[in-house]
Image (cartoon, rainbow, N blue to C red; front, side, top):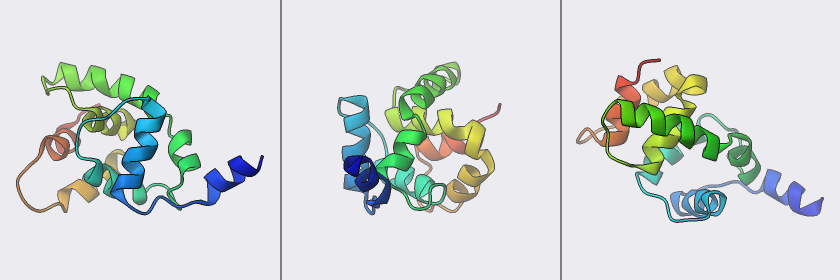
Length: 117
């Protein structure tokens, strides 16, 4: 019980911690832009905790996202799959955040901005 309380209160405040949490959930290293996924998620889960991440069911989101990624011809990328899998819940929010990203258009930004239901 105490562990559950800890998990619900400890805030994930940086990209490396998010990577560690996701790799723990997936039980393997992950690929893709974790920093940008962090930016997407920190606006959706307040506070962003391990418990909040677990409640998003990232493995199932990745399964849904893999189908969408493959159908669009994108290369394999764990973060893109997670984002595409969460688009049904956070479509407008993810698009608004991704549209503010500056610099070259990355695979994750392209996937978020071009995703259609």
